[in-house]
Structure formats: C-alpha cells, structure tokens
Image 1 (cartoon, helix red, strand yellow):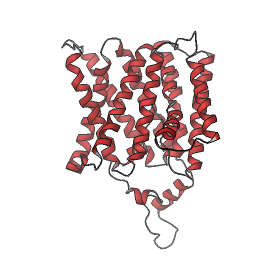
Image 2 (tube, helix red, strand yellow):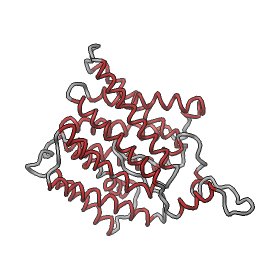
Image 3 (cartoon, helix red, strand yellow):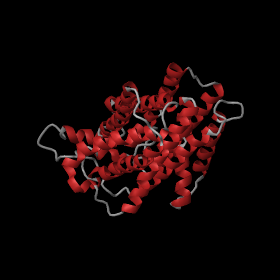
Image 4 (cartoon, rainbow, N blue to C red):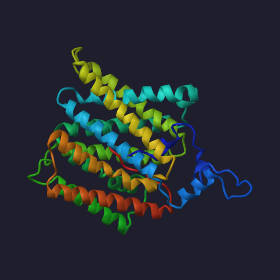
Amino acid sequence: MAIPLGWVETLGIVPPPSIRRRFGPVRAPTGRGGPPQRQRGALMRTRGYVPLSAILLIVGAVLCFTALDAMVKALAGRYPIPLLVWARYAVQLIAILLWLLPRMGAGLFRTPRIRLQLVRAALLPLSSLCFFSALRYLPLAEATAINYATPVLVIVLAVVFLGERMTRPRIALVLAGMAGMFLIVRPGSVVFQGAALLALGSAVFYGAFQILTRTLAGEDSRVLLFYPALVGTLMMTVLLPWLGIGFGMPWGDVAVITIAGLLGTIGHFLFILAFQRAPASALTPFTYMQLVWATLVGWVAFGNFPDAWTLAGMAVIGGSGLLITLHERRRAKGAAQEPTAVD
C-alpha cells in the first residue's frame, strides 16, 4: 500500500505545512560562513539532493513490509485473514496511542470532516483485507506487483472523481500499466485465478484511499495517521467473535503475528525518518525495491520464482509507475507525490 507524505509529521517535530511547502525548518543566516547547517540541508532538498541515509531508510521500510507480507502468507493457511488484519492495525494503534496521545491529548481525535475521515480510514483496512487474502493463494512477488498498479489506478480515479484531465502521457502510462498486469495475469499462469482480483481490489481500495488523502491534505497528518489504525482495529474487532477463534493458538504463532504487526509499524517509522531527510517525490523510485524484496523472499521462503513473462510484467508495471511519478511531478512543478509501498 502506498504511504502518504503526511506520515512524516507523526513525530510532531517537523514544521507546519505552510513552512514545509517552502524550504522546511530554515533559520536565518548568522554572521560569516554562509547559511547554517539546517538551512543548507533544506536547500539541498529543494535541489533534489537525496542523502544515502534516506535511501537506506526507504529500502529498509519496504523490506519490513515485505517481511510482514511473508509472515501473513505463512500464517494465512492456518488463521482467518481478518484476525491477521486485526493484529496488523491493533499493534499500530497501540504504538500511536503510546506515542501521540500524551503529546496531543484530545487533539488526536479532532477533525472538522469526520465523515470523510472515517470513509478514508475504512478504505485502508479493506485494502489490507483484500491483499492478505490474495497472499493466501498467490505467490508473494506476483501479488505485490499487481498491487503496485496503484499509481495507474490513482490517475483513473482522479479523472473520474476529481475531474482531472486525461492527457496523452497519462493515457499511455495507464495502458502500459494495464499491459504489465496482463503479462502477469495471463491464461496458463499461476496467477490466472480469482485471487488476482483480490490483489487488484486491494490496489483499487488503496487508490481511493490516496484520492481521499489528497482531499484531506490540509488536516493534521498525525490525525490522518491515527484514524486508519483506529478504524481498522475496530472493523476487524467486530468480526473476531464470528471467526470461531479458539484459545489454542501456539505461542510461536502469537509471537509471529505480533512481530508482523510491529514490522508494519516499524516500516512506517522508517518512512517518517526518510521523509525528514528528503522529499517524497525524490524517494518514490526507491520504494520499487519492494518488488525486488518480494521476489527474493518469495523465492527463498516459499520456493516461488517468477517466470520470464511475469518478470517482464513486473518490469512494465514498475516502469510505468516510475514514469507516472515523474510525469505527475513535472505537472505539479515539483509538488511531492505519494510513494507506493505495500504493507
């Protein structure tokens, strides 16, 4: 799933949007020796400088998400998917409450557009529910690649619901992304089954989530972070009594489920640290390392390695996603885009 730029304010130590849109936390020059270190860092960010530390943090974040997905895939055959989704969001909710509630108090719940906030928050666990269900039946790399069609779907949804114009480059990139999906989900392939629709449904839900994130972009991003964790936990908690879960779960599986939830939270935390060092638009290409991680982990852990056609489809999807990011970045004259990462 893609991670909105708003995650960067979770720690509460970055400037407000009105300042961040310019150069970040900049202090006035003092005396000789040029601008202070923080100002130099801000100017480097505006010039497209991407520190190695930010790249490593992004690569580590998507590795966490891949490990989370692998653990879910390993457990999906033994436990109901809603239970795994519940653990994923419950752990994150606890972490957010421990971190932000003492700092923000009731402000963590405060939003002027509560209905839209709740709709947006419900889309993310629905996306996870579809994606985790797809992982039960599909190889890890293929499911991840289909989910990386989100940038293509965001363009389509933006045209339909936000009235944005479908330009020729957009049409070409959308068609390329669809061609990549057809290469992966083709007759005779292991992915040519109904479960592929679950992975695609996950991308659709996440595309809608990103559209609503744009709509709510002016709100406190810590609140935007909090509501999906809260709503996801509550939605899955309502389902738990109907799943027939007994009390005989081995402690080893309990530990794996808990670690999986922690990995999702740690992945988001690494994203936060990365976005404090470089703009999201500059870091987006490195999120596609998740396709590499998913291929390697799927091969080592489950013995599934994509064939040549699937690898070609993954390359087409990844390439079209990167080109969409660059195209939209130029159209927005440098405005930050939302990187894609499946968690």
